Length: 207
Image (cartoon, rainbow, N blue to C red; front, side, top):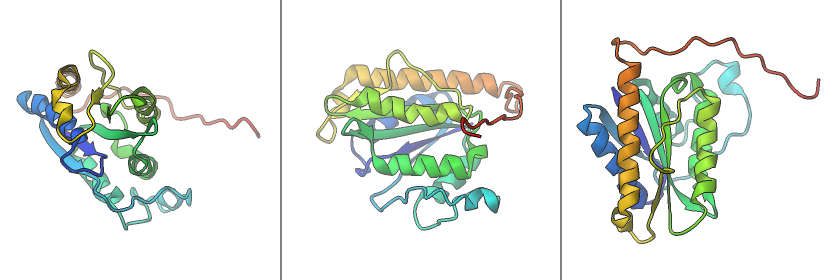
């Protein structure tokens, strides 16, 4: 089993990386492989609702000039997902939102049923709002949201300060332990045991 952890901070080795690394250590201790992927500092295109990924059944975004499809390819081998982001103005990093929106819309079959967790890192406030925003796509994709002893929030401003948030680090370990437990339950038979669901019945409020 493998967990893909996405570092949505422009700082490759900053506080978001520290938080994700703490979770990765616990997953590794539970014999679950991990990979932390940094989205980088180059622009991540927002979705333009062209629908080409669906019309052409590409399984990826039609735009191939940023990290979106590269991360999508890594989801082929991932059994769970953790997305970390710093908090900007009470919101996740805009690049993370662009990535998740395009990734889930163009390749949603790669994430459906897989456990997921959001991680937010902030200086002082706004983390709960950002955390709620990051969790909403998981719930739309039938992804079990992995909880912890507290919301998955870590505090720190200057590089390295996240490691000083002892409760935050423990929250990361608890979340990772819960994710490991859930993954082992899902894969107990050797193959993923996912529930059967009714076909989607979309309804628009204006007909």
